[in-house]
Length: 275
Length: 310
Image (cartoon, rainbow over all chains, first blue to last red; front, top):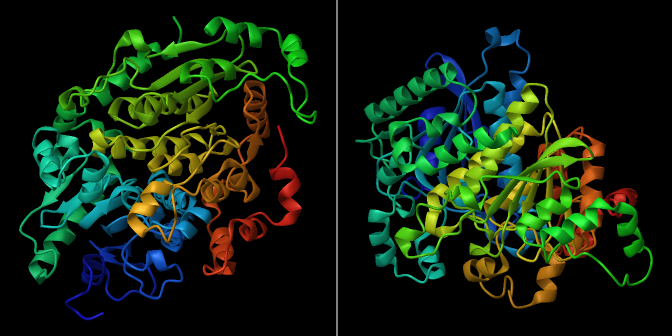
């Protein structure tokens, strides 16, 4: 893989964490961030992957389980509170995943469990007190994003062409909902959760920061430093907040666009115990 | 319809008489669980007379997004939350209704599940154990609510992981829709999974695989091949689900009760990272079949316990 075809996940991993220790589909490693050790994890293409449906930057069987292992290594390393003053290292998920792997063997061997293992690991890290930050530098699609990033305390994204969060690729979504891609785009203008733009995703209260002015494919040193500063600030913020995902419903935008989510919780709590 | 369900459950001895033991050939009369709508499924799993619905149809919390797209709402958004007791212990059941939008997860239906699990967690943290059961019957994210569907699935998953440290989270996949998409990950996070032969569990549905990977990867119309791949029987035989039960309300109920009796497992399936990485390493992707996989994922010594009927 030469420098022009390197994926964003790989590029940002190198920019923030240096050379990966191993190779394969999941890169993970520790590097200094704001004066402390942080774990960085990303999914990269793996042309030699044993599973032919999982050779690009998708989350397949091995990717799911290896993500889980990379996260759990960090949990285990900080499990002893006497180490490092009891501080649990931040975990930065660099997100550039275009989908889960679609294949016959993937289903047979339980890709749903492999992805669940990654969800489990990230959620457990967050619950244990690791600040978990998702840094979206490319696509963050569907089940792949659930497995790698969506359990984070904080989600930030580069405001750049090609970063997006969505439940289904645009072409497939158009097919399934029997619309044209253009009609789907038009719908996204009025129906915020249908939109593919990062700005719309932010309106849902799910994004903690949209980082503009950064070249996602060829960042210069100053831009990398800016992203690093954002991560440091989000880590600091995550440590002051609680360990749940409740924050996602607390922002001003969530109060507007996720009013139903908030209402469901409020009224369910009222009815929870019989009067 | 609710009347019949109550009668059935309120008199266990009569119910027993009407329901021959599983080992008898071809029981003549069964109370099909699959044929029940979500509300009656929840009622059938709770102790007789204990069913109490939360955020029911009369609360009218509907999808704010479907009307904008000209789609008629349902007053419960296709998700029933019921409190009650299971074996006398406080319980909460979240049941998806496949008859509305294929059980798909929208902002409201998904938030109802997440909120119910979050409330159960709150009670558990206060020392009041609540037994949570999720009845999965869903294709995954409701595409008309796309990103919010995905977001609430992440919230459901977070709640399951936090809750199952206190109490087993029991999932049931009865069929006929099955459990797919992001909700298949939620199912995989459950402490125990109860399935029928009519259940299917997979991340990507057969049609999606055929669409994305081509018909040579999987012919979605080849029903036999699909059921052998992701059907309930195969999932239990390969230890990706725990209990295979008949399509019978009593059998499902017994399996759910038995799961709670077992307590929180020492290590949840989704925590067994090294075990599964080793198993994957032993699999030859070119030659593995659903049949040979069983021996890798569920070595013969374990067959008896994992395949045991409730």
